[in-house]
Image (cartoon, rainbow, N blue to C red; front, top):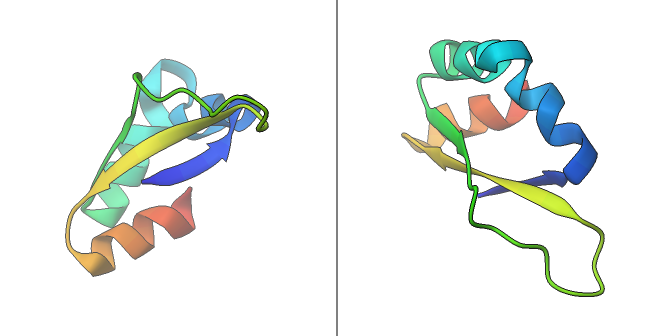
Length: 65
């Protein structure tokens, strides 16, 4: 799981999902937004992305994000 500030999630997803598709393509990992995640009360709002793949693919995806 990769936590990002709520207002930055759109940058990672990109227009029409193009940026996240490119991250998936370049890293070989599978990255998707966890739509069920809710920030704990009293903490800054954030979004969570689920990352699947080999450890190397996940590291690459995190770097691209």
